[in-house]
Structure formats: structure tokens, C-alpha cells
Length: 303
Length: 303
Image (cartoon, rainbow over all chains, first blue to last red; front, top):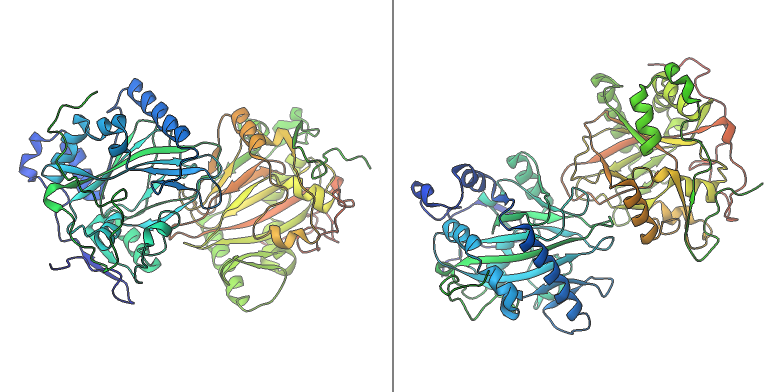
């Protein structure tokens, strides 16, 4: 299989153009989309889109309650699916919540979300990864700049750019509590990163990503090309959709305000995983490589 | 001498009320001030104030040039006045620029600045500390929450709250490149911090402050009391004045955009330093304890 997006194979970084559509449904079918033309244009151009009020206040409140119940019930759980802060025992992420929990399974399959995702990816989809991120006040650490696709491609064997992330804010995201920063337009370029992938790299990279991080010059180039940086603020319930290859990061949270979200990655059923392109071993199923790639939305889901 | 603001003496944090005015000139003399009533009200209530366009574009451009000339000429200088990043050789701060450099001395004594400072502090003033902060793109580290007064009081022997900081932005401060975060109204409360002051603490604290940092509960209380956090963004040339006891911090700068500023602390000549209240040794003159406390503005300064 040809590697359309090589990375971690050279000691020099390289920027190449994206080889896949951003919106995989023909734009002549915009009128069938659950998004407006303006929203589709924005997503295609910038590589991300924010949507407010898709969920009701009641639904958002229920999700907020549910993530803390899950955190509480896992306080003392020893599991690879539970990631803790580098310098404390606080839970930073819980993975695979759409598989292990009926409530979050239903959210992942919510038809309002699915209609959007199906349109953008132009096919049926399945959940490639899901997690809850807890960024408690005072102690949430920063995430380095990265393209998710770079990791999914090299470490998980995702062949093409036909996936997206959906983040549902479950606390208010201010400009000061470590919100998501995105480089507009960066999804149109692929930065081949420097460095080889260590065996079991995911264990390290979930705490502090060091491999698959773009070099400063490439990032600077992308930011200049995109005309700046965008910061995804918004009240709890706001949905941020970003394309698999959009460069993003977040600073630490030094404020008393927590920053929590529910995070789901959808992949097209036409884009199923192959062998990892990095030559490193596969990451475990709970992070990425699902046995089940049955398309979502074919059964009735609860509301 | 009575210690009105004890800190670092108990193993429990404590919040007490401010015992000094915020604006030291009688408010009945507002009409004599170089600031509007709205500006004075804002400063008194929040503990900080931003002013745009006080300097001309030409003046700002000259300052921007001057700070890099100084950085370049000190590239290989070994001096206590030059602080470098914890994990690289890049210059993070140069201290005492108003004493060592004629150009920056003139800025510190600029009569537009002095008129404001004299009014707010209600007396003649001298420079307690000056420095240039360089926060280069990608590598500027975070500054923990702190009240400057807490340090100046315990480590330098500043008796009362009758000083202020003036930061002149010399690059555009965006919401995303590690701008100053301030807790509105926090200047009205004094947080007695926990922990003793190690000998030569300043050497550590200029890189990463660990002593004199408020506990999380006190900070949370202040933020709730103040109704949130403020972020001091603004284009190059914007001046941010903040009261000596205003709680502030900044996150790391992960963006390609630098964040540089010229920073001067003015103290009232009625508030000259005594022995440090912490019992620790005095910090060196270049950081704080000036031999010269002659009031500024008595000689003609260049423009």
C-alpha cells in the first residue's frame, strides 16, 4: 500500500499538500447537508467549525453529571484506559467511553451528530476513538501542537484524511482556561515530522507528546499561511468539529475554572485502518484500533 | 516596625483586607489627574488599567528596536541581571535597564508616565525595579500566580501598598500568546502565603516562582469575589498599569508570536524600603533594593 502521508522517516521536516477532500460529499449536494452553506464553507476553508445549541441545556447538564459520575466511579481504577496527570493522581482522560458505557454510546450515535458527520465524511462512519478529557482548575497541563491524523496514520495505520474530531464542551471554555487553539487552514497541508516512533510511544504521548510534533518553522509557516490562530471558546454544550489534520494545541490551565469535554473521533467506513505506517507496533484497541467498525446509526439510539 | 502584611510565617494561608488606599491622591482632586474619572474608577475598583496610544507609533517602533539591540549585545554576557529560560540559553529578562541604559532611563522618566504615576501614588516616585521581558515564540514559560507586593514586602522590605507596575507591550499581546492574566479586585485583599523564604530565593523565583504563591483556595476565592479573570491583550505600545498587590499570572507561549514588554515598577518616596519582613537576606540592588531613591522627574528628560 502506498504511503500518501509519510512521517517520522526523515531527519528533515517537510510540508506537502493535502491529497484528500475536506468535505467528502460533493459540494453540489450542499442543499442536502444538515449545515448551512456558510458553515460548510467555513469548515472547508479553516478545518474546523463550532456549533452552539445543538444540545438542549437539559442534555448538557445530564452530560456534565455523567462525566463526573464516571470519574468518581473510576477514582481508584487501575486501567490503561484511564490517563492521569503527569505529576498527580487526578484523572486527565478516560478512553473508550462509547464502548464501555451505554450513556456515552448513545451520545456517540446521536442522530443530530451523525447526520453532520456522515455528510462531512461522505459515508457511513464508526467511532475511531472516544474519550472524556478532564482539565481541572489549576492543574491541567498543556498539549503540544499536533495533527491527530499524523499520529493516526503513522501509529494506527489510518490511510487517508477522512476522519474528524468532535469535541463537546462540558464546561465553559474561556480564553484563559486552556482552550483549544487551532491553526486555520492547516488541514490543507501535511507536516512530515522528524524522529522515529518508539515502541509503545502512546503511553508517553498521552501525557506529553514528543514524537509527531511539528517543528517550529513548519508551524510558523502554517500560522502565517492561515493568517493567525483561532481559539475555540464557548459555553458548555458548544460543539467544536475539527478535521483530522487540523493542527491544534492547548496551554495549561492555571485558572480555577475546569475545562472538561467529551471527545469523539469519527472515521469513514471507507477509510478503515491498515498496518501502522511507522513500522511501530499497533496501539491498543481502546485508544484507536477498533475491532468493531460497524457503521453507527443503523440501530435505534436512545435520546 | 509593625508588619501590616505578614506572609510566609504561618502554615495556614490567610486573607486579610488591604490597609492602604489604592489611589493615594485624594479623589476630590480627580480633576487634576492626567486620567479621566472613568479610568480612575476602573483602576481603583479592579487594580489595573490599560491605556492605548500614549506613545506614538514611532516611539513604540524605537523601543522595539532598542530592546532587541540590548538583547543582541548581551547574548554572551554573564550577569546576574540577565535571566535565561530554565531549559535554554535564550534571554528571558534583563533587569535594571533604567539604570544601565540612558535610553531606558529616559523612558522610565517620561513625563507622560510620571504624571500618571505621581497622581496614583500621591507623591514623588522612584524606580523600584525595571526589566525587559522577552517571551519568544514557542518557548516562553508560564509565570505562577502572585502578588508582587507580597514578594517586595517579605523579601525587599517594602512597608506599604504604595507602588505600581507599568508594563509597556512591545509586541502585540493576543489572547493566545501568554498574555498577562489579572484577578480584578484582588488588590483589595492580601493573601498571606505559606512557607518560609529560602536564602537567595530570588535566583529560583525569577525562573519559576514557588514561594510566595497563593494557595488554590485563596485564589479561587479572589476570582469568585472579583467575578472572573481579565486578560490584558492589546497591540504593541499598549500600557498596562497594575497595582502592587493585584494578583496576576501568565501561561506559557506556545505560539510563534513573541510577547515582549518593558516593565517598570514605581514606588512612592514615602514608601522606602526597610529591612525584609521575611527575615531572609536582602535581594541584590539590581532586582529591587536601590541605593538611589531620588525622585524622578526633577531633571529634564529627553524625548
